[in-house]
Structures are given as C-alpha cells and as structure tokens.
Image 1 (cartoon, rainbow, N blue to C red):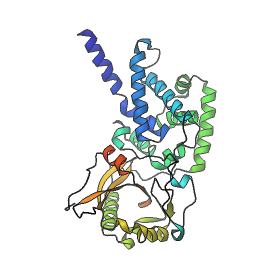
Image 2 (tube, helix red, strand yellow; image 1 turned 135 degrees about the horizontal axis):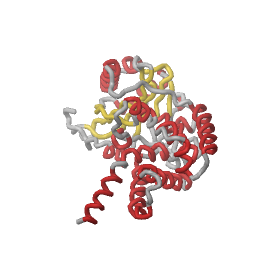
Image 3 (cartoon, helix red, strand yellow; image 1 turned 60 degrees about the vertical axis):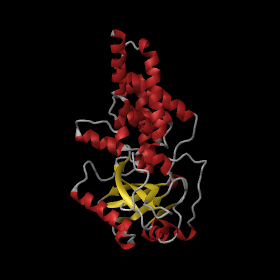
Length: 328
C-alpha cells in the first residue's frame, strides 16, 4: 500500500504542473499538439528518473529543466512555425488566390484551458494571456531556441536570472545578454498588445455580438464598421493574407462567398475571443465545421481575423460539436 500511495502521490504532484508546462512548451514550439507531446515526454522522463532527483532544486524547476531540454531537442530537429504574414507581403484582392503551402509548419491555435493555469493575481493572468496571443507566439518563433527559453522564463514566468542560469547550465551574465538580444529581436516584430479580455467588458461583449450578427448576416458594411483600417485576414494552411477593408470585403464577396449563411459558436483561443464557424452542409441538413476564427481586438476594434481551416484538428481539440442541427 505504501508503494501504491507514493506512486499516486508522485503522479498527482507531476500532474499539478501539466497545464503550466503545456503553456511553456506551446510558447516555445508554437503548436498545441507538439506542446502536449513535449509535456508527456517530460512527465515520462521525470517519472523514470525521479529516484535521481535529489531535491537540490524545487520539483517545478526540475520539471522545467526537463521540458526545456525536450523543446530544444524538438526545435533543433525542425523549422520554426510561421503565420502567412511572416512569409509574404499582403496580397491585393485582385491577385488573391488560395495556395496551400504544405511544406510550411504553420503556427497553431490553442485552447486557453490547455495552457493557462489558474492563478490568484489578475496581473499574472493578464501577462499569461498576452503571452499566448498568436502575434506574440509568432514573434517568439523568430528567436533562437535558447533565447526563446530565456525570454519566456524571465519575462513571462518571472524567473530570476540566477534561476534561469541554473536551469540552462550557464552564467547570469549569459542569461542577461540573451535576454537583451531577445528583447531587441522581439521589438522588430512589434507584437503590439491587445485589449484585456478576461473577463470581457460590456463594450467588448457588444463588439463580439455585432461581429456575429454581421458575419452571419453577411453584412459587409456592418462588418467593416467593426474592423480597424489596417485589419488583416489570414487562412492557414493557405499562404494568402489580406490587409484593409477593401481587400477583405473584396475577398468575402468573391471567393469567400462560400462563407455566406454560416453560423458562429463562441469559444476562446490564445487569450483572445474566437468562434467556430459552421457552414451550411451540402445535403441541407444542418451545418458542418468550416473554420476556427481567432480575433485580435485592439482599441475597441478587430485588428485581425485568422481563419484556421483544418477543422479535423481544431474542432476536437477545442471540444466543439461535429456539426450543428438545422436550427443552429
């Protein structure tokens, strides 16, 4: 019984860190699925080597050291993840066409609940949410892996330089230098802050209600009234992306007409409002998954609409229904 109890206790202790470790690995890797794989690998390694854990550091620090090594190994084996806007300039709607880029490893969305642990301090919650936004995670992908780890540990998770140095097996001076370089690189990509949205205030709620009404009614005038002038729209796995009202509306009323008649179901992704888009099914019986739409809201307007089209991956991950009935 003693061995069983100690085994269950260890499992419980390790599981207590799963969500925050998944958040860390997601920021490092830019993939919800790879992050979960990395954390599972971390847990297995921790379980197998727990007898060697001598308690010179906390269990949390030890797990982060293992997770960091797992992520660094994965990053050394593959390409960085990207968004369409990381690869090309915006396309004028007159030349817009859908071209899949299967060779590109796309940045992936993630459900908040998988990566944001419950914390008592609202200020900590704001930092955690801001640091899983698509724009921020995309900017992180431009950093070399070790600089990425340093910046996340220092700026997001508020580790001390000495703690990070111990984790990485380097000096405090090296950590500070890496952080300085990482900050400079991140500034080049300007992942500007979004409006706080936890919880949504009354104005934000009204904005999203108007967005749903405009999208479901396919009212382009009402839709553009909600968008910033420089709003962007992307559709991974296609490399096309658009900027500005005219090109977005031109697309929506052209190739995008296929979205007319859709229904939207609210969810949350990457610390941002999101919607599951369901398209009228061809058999006329209800609605089928079409896209996961992640919105970026800044200064009271929508600054970005990212349509993730691989619904066979995203809808199960977000716990979304396989289809909607005819009544929506």
